[in-house]
Image (cartoon, rainbow, N blue to C red; front, side, top):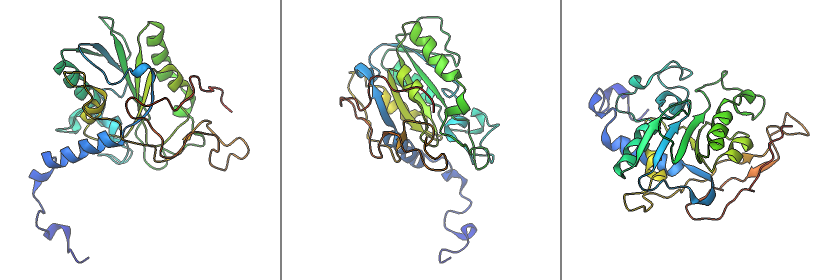
Length: 263
């Protein structure tokens, strides 16, 4: 109350501050620092050199999805990229970083390609939600729908390694998707600055790491979708503990094969 009405403060009505570069820089830094690496088999990340990369999944070029609920609309739905002037999708950042290194990209949400890629980055996750629409009785991803898992597995069957980027507002039971991915990154909801993901995932022109993974889990990650003794209680079968996560070059923190059987 001591500051007075917002409309009477020093910068009130100064619309030039909306989307200011200094503010976007801080938001992009927050994206880099919040990414959590759960798996990086054979050090497939960071992306290096002149690779041809397929960028797939319905979250790859979807700024609405990377923002989540309470964004423009109540549930954060029915928005399109043009509703976010100045924002960058995850694809935007990956394309720029990879091509700057002499590589190339191909964007196709369904995972189809014209030139066989050296690897695929699949971006997928929860649809935007707020209260009510986002309430779930189990920690099951998309109520058991397997479209994203099938996409990952179809690429693997073609001999294409897969880096998965998971967009979510909460830890979910993702054992099957983790098993099928060569690398698995939890990106949470990166908001308007999707390019911050490429800052960490793509090396520089000399194949050196630009930014390391420093994010760690802010909550336990489940190994089951429900508490098998009492479904009114929190899941007690934990895959990864609060504070866990990988940086580049560290030893794996997950078993090679996770249990995919639901309760």
